[in-house]
Image: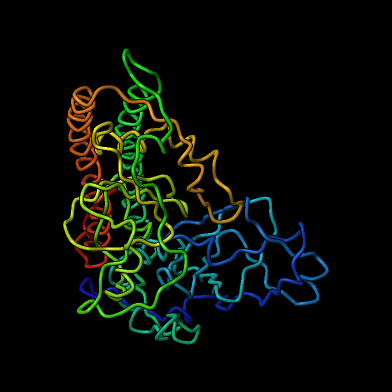
Length: 409
């Protein structure tokens, strides 16, 4: 290392360096000894997730000769994402074990657990882990390879001093991140509140009809999964993943044959200006206007909507569909307890409140002015969040490169 610290293999700095226990579903019980899994290990952070906690009984613990995980132990996930992430086990009122894809590390006195946790967040550590990872489809690191990974082992006094510096930086970064995320959420809620105010109540001279009466097309895409073809000979085939945050996003889609496309669009051919409305999955009830000018077809996860131009401005309709008022209607109409599925027949019956076309355009202009300002604020807060993550990485990098040797906490 650049700071001339000695390095030691992980397996050599631990009193306990072993895998967790193989716990089958039949071994689990409603309560008892807590089973910590890879999903409970964040990047440097223990994730309790008590709502999904799993347990084994005391008798099973003894029968399987499980290894108890103690406060102060480090647990390391040998599975993605990323491979090698580690967390320090806090003091709890629970007796705990861990699963077989986690490695238990109980360090000797010359390595402080917090020191290793901070090192595990550094680019240098992740680079060393990646060199030892195996598996083409599902990457992982074996315990034997993990044991050969070397970590810096400076004097404990240096470890304590740098841990104190890290704690201060990370605490301030966490507070700044919390504020930025709160501001980000507030800006989005402000926009949502404005939409709610526009569409929740009828204004003077506003009409109210069913969607089926103000649209010439309301239909979902093909239900069967088609045979996909190469993009050089195919027609774009869009799905619910192509409608995000009120926009039709063309970053990822597959292709179908021209013949199949023509069959699908014989009666209702999608075109520029139409609205795509997601109806399946966690992001159901999201609308976007088609702004591209090329042929495409849609999967069953999308509803194709064409407002009657003499009644409804398509951008006004997009914002109406994305308003909290309509989203609450969509939520009530979900027909599945598993994957959310918004029935197109219910959509046809949604009420539509609208003023004159001139007023609609005025409302769209006002919404888009506010939306532009909201996006500016979001960009600022997102940039700050990225900066905070980069700041933490930079501090860690400098520390493990020896640039903070003379620093004082």
